[in-house]
Image 1 (cartoon, rainbow over the protein chains, first blue to last red):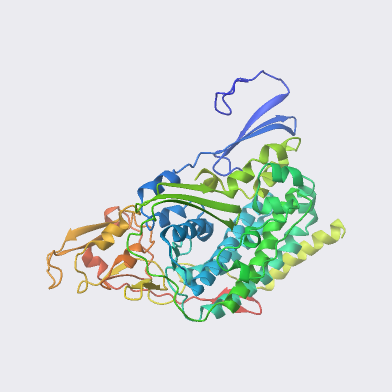
Image 2: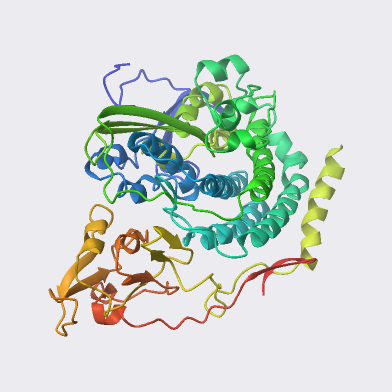
Length: 378
Length: 165
């Protein structure tokens, strides 16, 4: 096999038993990417994920826009989780420009970020349900997501791609009576997602399909550099909200969910447990938030970074650690911007997990990695 | 837990939902209610006022033709073009005003943040579909009109589940 050719084009010795399958990029079970699978009968011999079909050049685009006009396009990689994608960028620019954030704005950001994590996870869970042929699990999360989207819409004025975070705080204050509405809807949301355990997570059919498939051991999870729910499902207690608290997370009581199994079932259950934890964090933040005060520090219209400087900030997104590295050369635009996303790190584990599995288990293992193709390609 | 009891529990949890109210919003007949009259910005305080980021509204008597909204849109969507308007306001000596192309607009609202004269706000109108591309371009005269919105559905949480009342 020659190494220089792109995947799928390399010459191979013909083996009558081995068949090569291209899953994607138009296959509904792959998202905007291709998985090249070699199968022997029903068993996967080798697997080669091939991302890059939705590359947008976000990092290069950021070099031609100033620190404020970068905001709308940088949240496009994951429109369901747009607050969390923007969070490290905003934290980085605040350090580069040198501004303080009001206390109330920090709490508003935490609430927005947790709501967005739940919105993303519900969407991911709906697709996980339809991958496994469980149509109830597609309908319920897609409907219950509306409760939180409604809150984000009241808060920021848009259902997706909120453009709500800016360096120096958030764009607008909470609408009147928001705390009560938020508490009521989050409580009902929590009650609803607890019902999923009977219909989905304790369902013997799901357990039979996902338990003991695609096992990622603790050592492999650390060695391959996976993050987020994949790492926590393999028994590593690592959550940036707790290990490297940003904004006001250190004042809140954050509990991380860890499972030891490292199989598809554990990887699909951790995001659901995280959603329950997010509801707790939102309730704590609503309680501790200052009832009034400024939410935005006034910034000059076209802020400049202070001299030759660089900053790296990372946050815990719905898919794991999400880092943003910004280099400034004292101009109004960043000199270089690099996004380090959780999706791409988790995809590395896929070839190791699928080797020896049945082809029918491929969708459940692949989507349990909490992978978002558009974010991985940037 | 045995396989049979697990399946019965899963089915039972689904069957319970027959008695629960419908959560779906019947969109064209019912429309969601939003807070306030749309996203606005207070330049003296430097902070926005919460509301839906929908179609813009331009106050002709406040607009000075300073082009700051158009500059704010550069690099985001390039949807705002400054066009000549025949009627000349007292303070608008250039007699130019923004014209917005909703085929390009991403509804981020950065143009509203940029306006220092309380001239550009956003409204609750989000139904902007058109049969032609030209129909999506809103001239200053069209942006002046306050939209009519009949939105009254809100999420209500009852003992029998959530519903759009």
